[in-house]
Image (cartoon, rainbow, N blue to C red; front, side):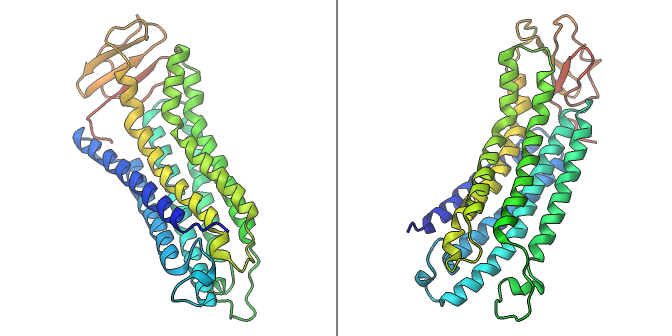
Length: 333
């Protein structure tokens, strides 16, 4: 039977390293543009801390309790001890998993909130933020109270313990809701862009900037598929659960990367694609008091002056489907 020991270590170390690099680039960009950190930045930092804790837990589990290996192959522990330690690490890891994904969602939604400063998209943003928090609360509660008393989840010697939650169904149900939330979050900017009077190529380019998160959805789908195969009563739990842990690790760390791709590239790449006074792209770059501003309009002769465009920030969707994008060094309110 396949041994997942090196795969777990690789998934944790490589994807966490990429996530760390992405977060550092985000913070450096903030400093270079002299912009203060906002809520979405703090959410991203918390998401990374929880993801790092999850990854550290996976590495610890692999080295000391045989994640991805048969119980008989775990050095220094009996099969009973390895199984008990595996359940304890799983109980702790589930808390970090949910928290990281929830804060990643809030970070992306916070980014949308700043970006679409005058748009009807703000109501769906609020709804999805509330749903993400509800998902986090419910999943955390279920993760903690897998068993009553709580420590019966890893200590099977406790008599009269009540453990009514099936791990396989728990993974599947909570990840399914999380996946649906992610798809909804990805769809928000797509719907906004499709309403703009831009050329097809421009629409595709803008939408693509927001769609890196689709890789997170792919990882979530794999976690769903693997959770259906998992037998929580298996005598080889550390080996059988390894595929779920591998893809869950990829999922939480790629979620961090997707935040940074949206945040650091969407506005900047779109601005760079515009040339001053270019009617072909229906856009113009103007220098305002607070920095470089880009205006995309379906009417090339209906462009605001730099004075008119000062003081606002974000993407503004008007009745005539004009969009203003501003690159500002002004501090967030």
